[in-house]
Length: 213
Length: 213
Image (tube, rainbow over all chains, first blue to last red; front, side, top):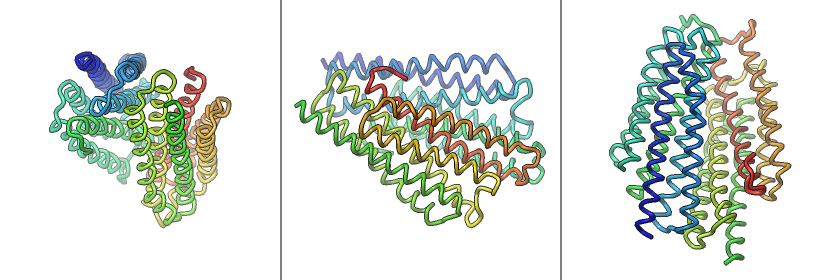
């Protein structure tokens, strides 16, 4: 029974790793769509979000099946509940990548992001990518130190988010309200992507250490 | 055992009802803070969000305890997983109310919302209130028809959200970028509040009917 539980847990972990890799790729494509007005990249993100949602349902089914068959208690039960939380966070990260892609598509063939903001969005996307990559690694091999790094990444994301508003609110912002609205929402999508990565990381840390971050 | 499960489930349901009432009150106070620059209302929301978070943890603990003690299967297990989903959605609704309150506070003593937008935010807040109220009622007494109404409420919210952008993007928008950014984020907070209410409702419908909406 114990071995069977371990094997099932391994399958659930692998599904979570697949989800993390999926949303990392999604945000990568979405950023390319955004910065290079690449229509096909945007459409790829939108088409593939269903796969991430499918993996999420898969995790839920596996966990429910496992709870019903094996009735785990204590740390095994906690691992199952944690898997549900982590899956929900990663699924939402996929939605946020899709929102970025849809914003790019709405403005296509114009770029949704003007030249003045390409730098900050490139940097936000770089942090988002790093965080998604770390979530995948932490899930494949639990590592509290690596999970804790997500907090620092999130601080860097918050700083970039603030600097984005600095550009939008500068006296010489030349693009008017519509571009500012797009940039505001896009900034929020990247920032929320990072928040969910932090949440997922905190759940994994809790699983490893038994302590909330 | 069966009676014990029912009694436990009843406690969990009551906690969810308490959460729904809490976030309904929170969004009500947040809206008052927003529309009347009421500092105390904003501070109440922020202070009381910890109570909603506390209820959320309570639901999780109860559910974990129940899974460990009773090892429910089939529809009982489904009810437990659903409770976790609903609690997560309602907890997030509380965060969104807090975001509205914080936006009001950041602009205080100025109003964060100019006269031209008071109507649309009043209407969005009205729908948000109605949806939170329905979630509370559906949780107290499962009712698939009432839960389905949340979808129509959400459509109305989306229409208001679109009309908000109509005002922001009209040629005679006189308030510049900063007010547009606030309004964009505020609009998103109300719209996401409604999305989470719909999600919570869908989970309850699934519980009642066994079908995803």
